[in-house]
Image (tube, rainbow, N blue to C red; front, side, top):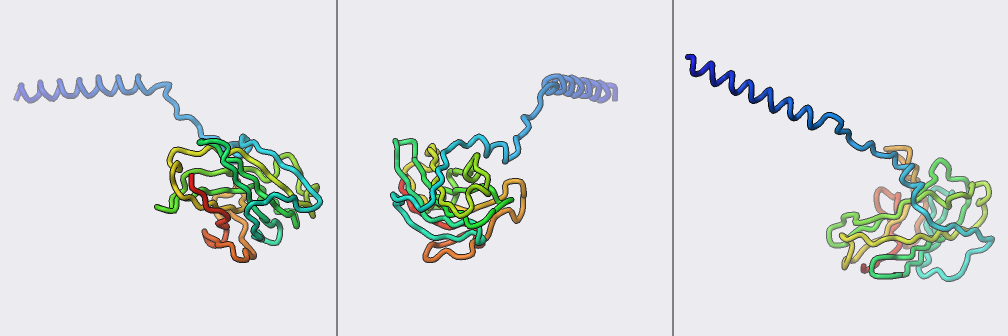
Length: 195
């Protein structure tokens, strides 16, 4: 019996020691607070040009109407290097889409239908929508090709969303012509690429 009590005391002492070591090791260990998505979107930098008529040079014209507020009129994609794409999006502003003030761009691998990268950004940064109504907009971004996308066939899907909401945060597509849609009619598949 004394032997069992002695073993229990040793095990208890060992557990207490390990617990103390664990507490000391984890004290001061704090998880990094994740920044809200809206803060991350502000870090995505591109250019926004405003025109009175649609500029030329669109390599893939489309006509996707998002809620009778914004039309996507085309996309141009140029491979700048093995690791970078230059993406231009052409929009027509029909009305103020606020609070749906951001564009999401999905790069989805055709072989497994998984998103391998993105180009989400605030719509036409630094320009208020009142200034853009009735105008045409060309946004241009440099997109780094993520490793999971290299060598794959990719569908590029685009939509308009409100980053502050967790649910029902996407603007519905009113019409898309021959352009296929996905995700309950909230994104248009506007381009196919091989990266």
